[in-house]
Image (cartoon, rainbow, N blue to C red; front, side):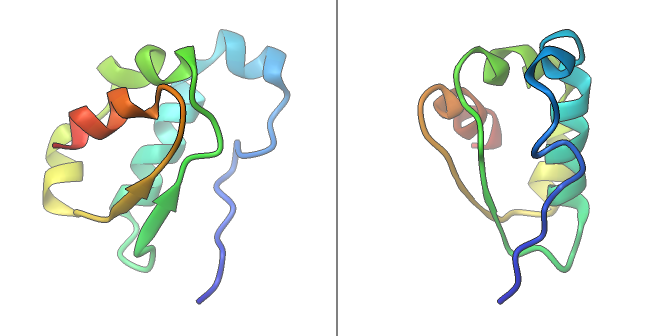
Length: 81
Protein backbone atom coordinates (compact mmCIF):
# COMPACT_ATOMS: atom_id res chain seq x y z
CA UNK A 1 0.00 0.00 0.00
CA UNK A 2 1.19 3.50 -0.74
CA UNK A 3 -0.34 6.86 0.10
CA UNK A 4 -0.91 9.28 -2.75
CA UNK A 5 -1.16 12.94 -1.81
CA UNK A 6 -3.46 14.74 -4.21
CA UNK A 7 -2.25 18.21 -5.39
CA UNK A 8 -4.30 20.45 -3.06
CA UNK A 9 -4.14 18.28 0.07
CA UNK A 10 -1.97 20.78 1.90
CA UNK A 11 -3.04 23.92 0.03
CA UNK A 12 -3.43 27.21 1.83
CA UNK A 13 -6.89 27.46 3.46
CA UNK A 14 -7.42 30.94 2.03
CA UNK A 15 -6.81 29.61 -1.49
CA UNK A 16 -9.24 26.76 -0.93
CA UNK A 17 -11.85 29.12 0.47
CA UNK A 18 -11.95 30.95 -2.86
CA UNK A 19 -11.32 27.92 -5.10
CA UNK A 20 -13.64 25.02 -4.16
CA UNK A 21 -13.08 23.67 -7.65
CA UNK A 22 -9.55 22.72 -6.58
CA UNK A 23 -10.95 20.32 -3.96
CA UNK A 24 -13.48 18.94 -6.44
CA UNK A 25 -10.75 18.41 -9.03
CA UNK A 26 -8.67 16.55 -6.44
CA UNK A 27 -11.53 14.25 -5.51
CA UNK A 28 -12.41 13.57 -9.12
CA UNK A 29 -8.75 12.81 -9.93
CA UNK A 30 -8.66 10.30 -7.08
CA UNK A 31 -11.83 8.57 -8.28
CA UNK A 32 -10.62 8.49 -11.88
CA UNK A 33 -7.18 7.07 -11.05
CA UNK A 34 -7.31 3.26 -11.43
CA UNK A 35 -4.25 2.90 -9.18
CA UNK A 36 -6.08 4.43 -6.20
CA UNK A 37 -8.21 1.92 -4.27
CA UNK A 38 -9.48 4.14 -1.46
CA UNK A 39 -9.90 7.79 -0.55
CA UNK A 40 -9.59 9.35 2.90
CA UNK A 41 -11.00 12.87 3.00
CA UNK A 42 -8.74 15.29 4.81
CA UNK A 43 -11.41 17.96 5.06
CA UNK A 44 -15.10 18.06 5.82
CA UNK A 45 -17.22 20.94 6.91
CA UNK A 46 -18.75 23.33 4.42
CA UNK A 47 -16.26 22.38 1.70
CA UNK A 48 -18.28 19.24 1.06
CA UNK A 49 -21.39 21.19 0.09
CA UNK A 50 -19.31 23.65 -1.92
CA UNK A 51 -17.86 20.94 -4.18
CA UNK A 52 -21.08 18.97 -4.67
CA UNK A 53 -22.16 20.61 -7.93
CA UNK A 54 -18.65 20.17 -9.32
CA UNK A 55 -18.58 16.38 -8.94
CA UNK A 56 -18.87 14.14 -11.99
CA UNK A 57 -21.16 11.45 -10.64
CA UNK A 58 -20.62 9.34 -13.76
CA UNK A 59 -16.91 9.04 -12.97
CA UNK A 60 -17.75 8.12 -9.38
CA UNK A 61 -20.29 5.51 -10.56
CA UNK A 62 -17.84 4.00 -13.02
CA UNK A 63 -14.89 3.96 -10.58
CA UNK A 64 -16.27 2.92 -7.19
CA UNK A 65 -13.79 3.14 -4.30
CA UNK A 66 -13.74 3.02 -0.55
CA UNK A 67 -14.35 6.61 0.58
CA UNK A 68 -13.86 7.59 4.21
CA UNK A 69 -14.33 10.98 5.77
CA UNK A 70 -15.64 12.85 8.76
CA UNK A 71 -17.79 15.86 9.58
CA UNK A 72 -19.84 16.97 6.58
CA UNK A 73 -18.19 14.46 4.24
CA UNK A 74 -21.53 12.72 4.71
CA UNK A 75 -22.82 15.00 1.93
CA UNK A 76 -20.17 13.61 -0.41
CA UNK A 77 -20.94 10.07 0.76
CA UNK A 78 -24.59 10.62 -0.19
CA UNK A 79 -23.54 11.89 -3.63
CA UNK A 80 -21.45 8.76 -4.13
CA UNK A 81 -24.44 6.62 -3.30
